[in-house]
Each structure stands twice: as structure tokens, then as C-alpha cells.
Image (cartoon, rainbow, N blue to C red; front, side, top):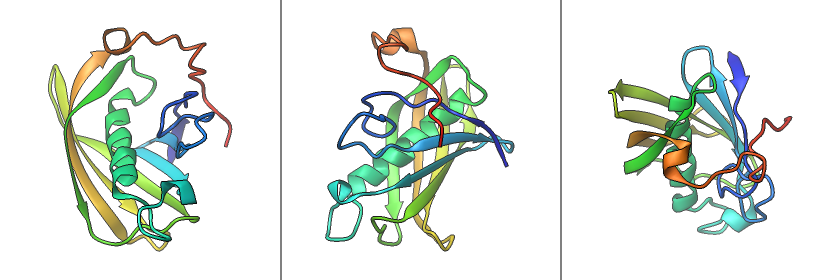
Length: 155
């Protein structure tokens, strides 16, 4: 059950709404503490014909797990330290897909996450794990929320 929609930005490759090559993923906090991602890969995200590129998939899972620390609008962000993905099934283009990320170990300065990308029939296509430093955005980048259009975008 969805509890809250997370913001998108202007130019992020994964969530940026004005990045012409971007995936334009929408993220949602779920009542169980996980983050749900919804997206549709396009031809520009292709690896093999008709299949989404593994690097794009890895980026989506990375951001989905990393956003779990922002659950309910938190001010701390996850900065990737390590990422591992296991590809089980080809990921098609031009169909809506979902991914889910969660925190599996939470420490004072870092967390570990796990995630999965699901095909429309519910089959797990890709599984991932990651390690992230917890950092306030001001320590990561010069980020002006207004300039970057960091806002909840209607579905």
C-alpha cells in the first residue's frame, strides 16, 4: 500500500523529468517501509534489441535502494559505496515495470539495502544489494531544490 510519493528532479538520469535520455522513474514510500519504483524503459535505454541495458537497470535499483533512507521525507540521502546486481531474466522495453528497495541493515553512518526488479507477471528479473553512506544533501552536492525542480510530480 502506497503511503507517500517521493519527489523527482529535473536532470537526474533515473528520476529527472526533463532529461531527454532519462528513465523518469517515479518512487513511492510504501506502508511496509519499502520504496516502490515504477517506470517504462524506452528504446534509448536499450542494450540488446528490445531489452533494457543492464547499466540502466543497475542505476534504477541503486536509486530505489538508496531512496529507502529518505522514507517519509527524511533529510538524509544514501550515497552509493558498493552495488551488486544479479540478472536472472531479460528486461523488456516499452512495458511498465516495478522495482522495490528496502533497508536490511541500518547503522549510524551507513545502511545496506536490497532490491528487486519485477517483470509485469511478477517474476523477479534482477536482484541487487548495495551499501550506502548516510549524508545530508548539503555535504553531497550544491543542490538548490528550486533550480533542480525537486518536487512531487503527479502521476
